[in-house]
Length: 370
Image (cartoon, rainbow, N blue to C red; front, side):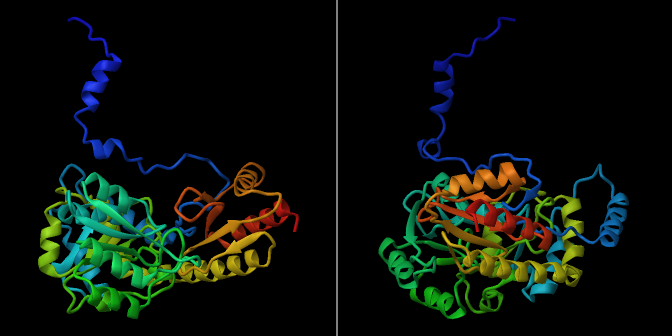
């Protein structure tokens, strides 16, 4: 067999088959680190209680691993319905809420379709909109990182947007929309209103009660934050049943494996066991805000999530220096979000255990000389 030589020209021939809009986008990625204290991804610092974890593994051991999982993750869906009070026909579950965001956008967005996205926010919304050929219409937050509701409504009307994506509480800023603001956006536009509520267990308005009577409203939730299941990848979507039926067409078959289905259903029914961790993270978030706000050279923003956004405005210490020294000297990894719109010189710190937060705050004070 003649060995084929790969040349730059042959690679270019293959890449020319990729949609130009995709080649013009940057991938969603994260640089790998191995820190001592990991405060960069908004995960729960508390694992699932050990007795519950052992009971779950026993159930998994009894399942046949050689068989496909159920085509419909019925127990997972039933548990979501029980906890939320929303009918099972309007529930979709997925491999993390990110998969459901992709499915939702893919059934609505195409060339010529506009999506209004307040920014800065989670970059996946704009990335998936672009891959689908749609036009992302950005609406800047105000200087305090609050949503500009009137500007969102105006942008949706002007662009004739098919969708408005609202992360509330917002990542990476932590600010939330009120019930009245959500209702005003819904009533003032004709767009599909998507509420990504990945962080709502920590604060802000829980919008599930708004679903009834609003068929253009969609609520997304995840297990990666308050539910302490980032490693298992689980999320759910709530929508009017007929809309959920259409969104389901974009999901891959068997998208939820039996491990995730079994554990997610059990965790929903035992969610009270995780509440102490959620309460701790919320209290620690407030402590981090108080203590960072007392330091000179930092601007700290309010947060309803399990993280805190702050801007480094120190005369001698830049945000890059602070990030690097925390990592190199203390082994503490935070998130550099300075490349997001409006977030120049900003870092984001996830809420850890009290001991981890003590170490973070001590490192900040030492580096800033305070």
